[in-house]
Image 1 (cartoon, helix red, strand yellow):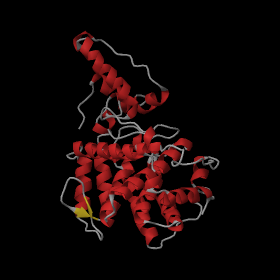
Image 2 (image 1 turned 120 degrees about the vertical axis):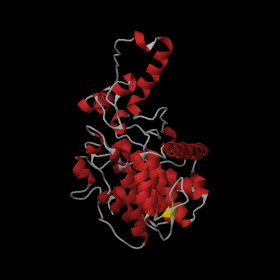
Image 3 (image 1 turned 90 degrees about the vertical axis):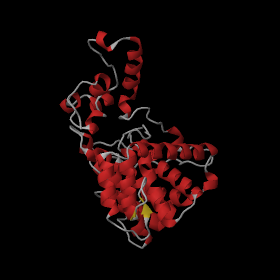
Image 4 (image 1 turned 120 degrees about the horizontal axis):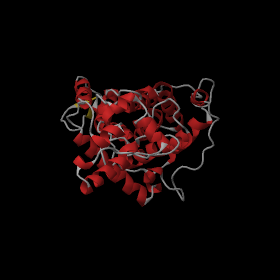
Length: 335
């Protein structure tokens, strides 16, 4: 087991509910409520409907519920369908660091595993906190560089799901290894005209992570050095192995307390312009506005305005990643 895998697995296995700060517990609860709210709003979305149809064709042992329905499926497909649901509106939480993403995408992994194995509330809260620590601490150190945020999701969700299962350190390490070597999606997911998969890429990583934890619980082993070995993650990213500081616990705060909620159902880089234009509309009639100039930061431009598709979005997924559309509302009809 390489040093990164060992560090993550040791932390995930060691953390207890009693070590969580009151602030961390509060943030887990409010994030859980926000995440379920995002899912409720997205229930009729096409990607979520497709995921539910696929999941409903499978019966699990143990079974886990598909959110918003009375149906059950396998634990991994429940995690996939439920993540596709909460992710669709692009309104769930955000963690911004060297690598950014939506860590609440991992919550359905914990809920599905907890549902299937009848885990209690404290176990769920602890597992969510563990998943967030893994996701956010990786994001602090690792720029995505062509990979998708599912890189962080796969590791964090494996830790959270493994925590529910009560994996020991060795098994947790194997779950992490299997997840990271098989569940990392490409950054092309969010380039050009965005497809339905934009909201499902992390769902795929979550499903892989849940499956990995289940395999590890049965004795499946993964590569010993998924991060630091030859052809491991750090080599592919061109990074030296990061030096890991303390994770949350004791005097160290938990990273879930540093996440933020989106005010509008659109990518985080568009939140400021949307809020400003809504305020502007209260002061100036739209008929009197000839043009709008938006000054923003480089990453926002790259993600939301640097491609031709962002100036003429054809899909909902592209529209919620388009400052030109979200600020002016002028483009061809999106589906």
